[in-house]
Amino acid sequence: AEIKQCPQCGKVNKGEFPAGVTQAAQYGVRIKAQGVYFNQNHHIPLERTCEILFDLYGHAPSEATIVAASRETEEQVASINEAVKAYLVETEEPVHCDETGLRAEGKLHWVHVASTERATCLEVHAKRGRKALDEINILPRRKGWAVHDGFSSYDQYPDLEHARCNAHHLRELVFIEERYEQEWAGKMIELLVEIKGVVEKAKQQGQTALSEQQRDDFEARYDELIIQGLQANHPPPDPPVKKKRGRKKQSKPKNLLDRLQGHKREVLAFMDDFNVPFDNNLAERDLRMVKLKQKVSGCFRTQQGAQTFCQIRSYISTARKNGQRAFDALVTAMNGEPFCPDFLQ
Image (tube, rainbow, N blue to C red; front, side, top):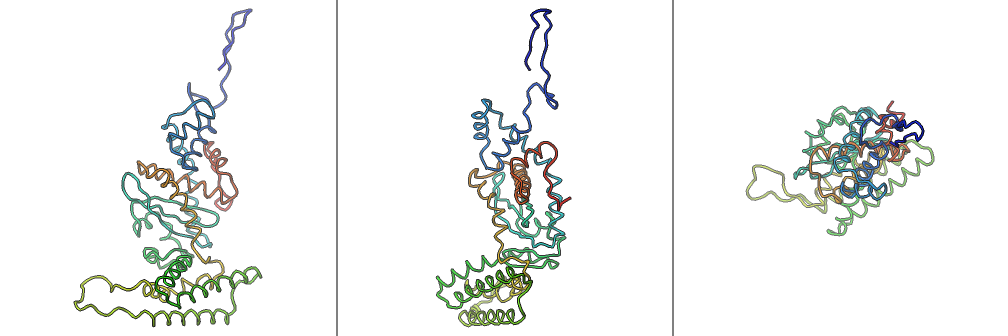
């Protein structure tokens, strides 16, 4: 604050601080938001974030300042993230689910995602399966569509309407066609892609479903290719000594055929309901930043740091999906008024 002394009367006058400045040394909202933006949104390590701020403003805050600003942001956006979780339970939109590994405190943890085109929820947990999904508490309460890659834990929720990711199926089919040279796999690729094209064309024409004849024809061709595949991949013979535990070891083609046959309705869900997507790429895109963060930083030193990252990334992703700039969303959060989409209010 500038201090002036009157040359006539000798009175000393001191400038007033702006409203909200209460400490002798204090960072403003936009500076703290920039630190969070660089560190949490662009995955820049703490030391380099402080370097950037020094280069921009001639002053480098401590790493602890950036950590504290991130924790403050996490607290401010907590209500929005809770509202997102409630929305993901109730929405009629398909919810995309996936998980990926993340190291924190020297141990493997898992980041679970549940998302739609309008909202994202990322949660870090020490477990990958049912225990984590129960504690996150979205899928146990949900009754609508859930799109996933077929991980067995998702199948433990019978109230869900399950849809399987066909991008995964296409990758496996390509492998089988190239590695095992099985003709049925190439034909199944062509069929799935053909159905996808017909569904997209029907949507563009304003249709809400395929004709019964179209569906019957596609299903008959699907079933025929499964039969061809099973004929080319007989089940393995019984071992000479029966094992007490475990399933028979099967070839990769046979494993895939069993899934395509046993989960036919889930594989073709995109054909039966036009609201269901062909793949689970949305969830994979929402997890991509988690993998990028790990590629840059290697791991999180604390579980709290991983939790803070996931909460801020959830908020930023939701804001961006609704037309907001990431930095602006962080500034409003730091001001105590985090961005809240209309559908959450």
